[in-house]
Length: 339
Image 1 (cartoon, one colour):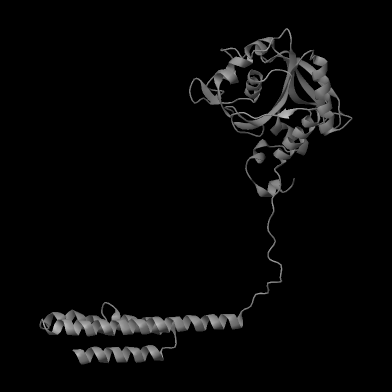
Image 2: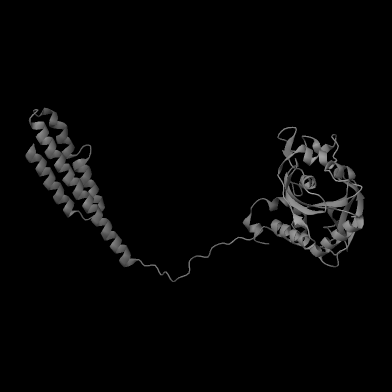
């Protein structure tokens, strides 16, 4: 059996040396060392050897296996080295050539409008303040003078975690928090995401963006409100823009109004965008209600103020002539490349 083992080793080493392809090396390994290989068959027959012969033959068998495995490994490494040399000789990379152009993104149209709005209000001295999107009901409703039977408090209109915690329905809670923490004068805007239980369609989404503003100081009047918002409209849509204030009703403000501005599409002539009126609705506004001031620890006999709020998604649709709000949230790069 000892001679047979040495014959297997010598024959295998010779075949390995003659091999010209990696596939031949694998065939030799299977034929000699595999489950049905020659060396494996001999090792299985060692049970017939005597106790004296078994360790001697076992040692020789292990030496034979190691020598064959070492030869196979060395031959494979030689093949890999030769393949690398061939690739280096036949392939080349010109490192001076320009690589493929990378696709560079740009700002979403919504955030372009948000940044422009912030820039306009910053020029008037407003500070930007942010607040939590998960809000207490007392900040979202109670401190803003919203009655307990108002429809906006219903589970069908607002996303609640429990009776006291919800996803904010407007950024007005930021204003309440600021009034509680800071003494007048106050001059802030609060842009951010808000949530309402709306069906998704061309003009509605359960998630949208608002920008609300607040000024609290002594001797603030409706004239200050109108002058400020008129300036904002002209900054957004051009110096020829006219504004119209229509009476409205908000619980947060009294008196309250909605502001329309000259239609940017037809410049007041009347078109499909403004439904022939020559004006488009821009925002809601009004003088801060005395109840809100009192709830926030501010004396309404000493201080007055105004507040306003606008939908930033709507402003973006109007500014860019986008007809479907859903396009703002689908991450369709073909759509976004237009802007």
